[in-house]
Image (cartoon, rainbow, N blue to C red; front, side):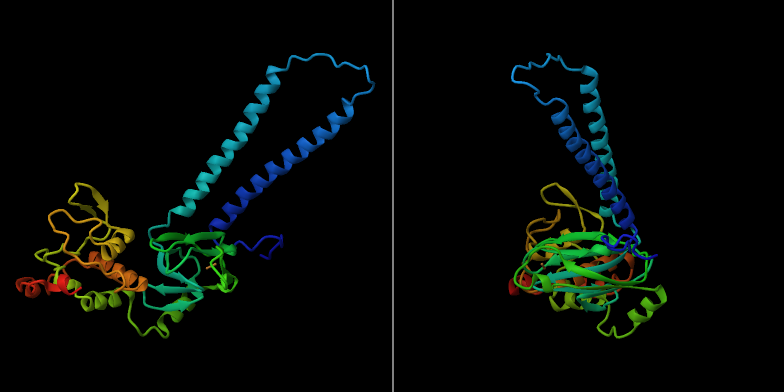
Length: 335
Ligand code: CUA
């Protein structure tokens, strides 16, 4: 299907038609009232113009019926905007559970993307047709905004935290990616392409030129390099909590609060370990701020996520490590 209305970008994702229909409704209501109000102004200005110096208009005491009508009708129209807008908003804000995870790190002035399988891209994103794709994004410097007009996707990307968005492409092709938040001198050059491929082409693309291992594997390496496993024993007998099955679970903290161990929680626990201390443990973990990159944090998150899906995989190695007391001071003192 071609682009019948060239003022508009093509509709290349499942939410694109929903966004467009809502926009058409808003435009329709705006145009209707603009025309109505301006016509009324001109009509009344002529019809009720003053015809002589001495003319006195008759006194009018208003019309309850008219007032009710012009209150109820706009109220109804506005409530439709609200309900419809909320519906589309929820659709955009809730990624489906089976979405493909892609991690985005923005910086002045480029987009760095990592696939779960390990592929890395700069200013390019390859995705399969018909699969929902969830982006988890952060920035190394200022606020950027991930914008793909053809998908009707626009989401701010902030330093120091994760934002997410998702889309499901509905047609094969090449779509422009923009940064939609002014971020400095080369903001306008912070652009790229999203390639939507047939699933088999995507599989071929994925298997070609991967090399470096999956995100989770790299995360595991990093976990060992940073000596996280000195304290986080998988059998739960370490000085720090076991991370087996932690991701996505509810965690009880020393202050009595319960939090869900999501991406943001894991990130914070790596960079500001004392912000939320798990009940039964002491706040002995040092910060890894500056020692691990945002990409590294994302790899660690994928590794910790993977610990959930393979119960029983790690405990095999745990007794050996668990039996040995970490050296006095341990990693905490060195970091
Ligand atoms: Cu990044 Cu504008």
